[in-house]
Length: 314
Image 1 (spheres, helix red, strand yellow):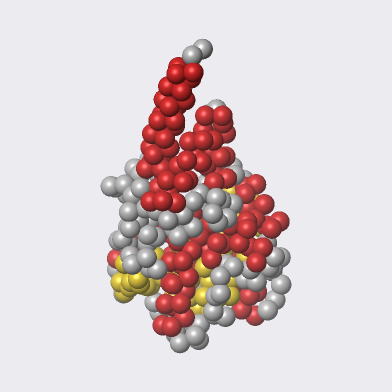
Image 2: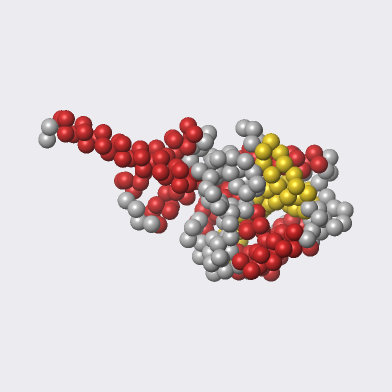
């Protein structure tokens, strides 16, 4: 085979791989029109609509902060009906909004007498941004939301971070940062270890040839670094919890085929702080609350109370 033919073939391969990497980056990271809209086939759509209607009838406050890179990030603050120092910071998942992920939990927390701050991640909902952060950028946003709450209550509050899916990875990635003492605990429902490992898992699950996909994902990560400011393997939940002192409750559906429960198990094994892991039978991705509502509420309340009163959770 002639050298020129080999070079042409290599050049064509490079062009095709680069194009595929750009497409992969665009598909996974770029904001899309219509993100966050409810899927009519969602089995829990009626509950979500019901709680959306309920929220619209409550006295809420639209709030906002500025991100480290100049984006206006927005949220909704639902105050408790009675005076309390307990606050939930709710962080939603990938290409959804807070009400989709926290419809039932928002009502539950409000009924328990907590303040709740529902935030829209960057490039989601009412918040600005062109590129999804997968926790790598969102951890900085979460950090600023925490300090917003700490200032709002003059440091006299007990903050619990509750994240679902990408939001769970975000709060775990935030756990190693220099957080105020008002942060008492983290609830992470179906988190991934890192977005790199998540992409690798999905590639294997879909039986795509790794010899082809590896360079595509690797180059897409470099594109993401240049365009969005982070690389896929830059930060991991499993890595950050090695340096945290914040107590963590991990929840994961046993039948989750989008983010496997083994990722929560890995995070649990890596975690340096007080920790609990609850694997929920029959629950798929982000379904644990809907599948086992009473048990979920019991686990969460017991965790919160144990961190507020110094008792050991079981």
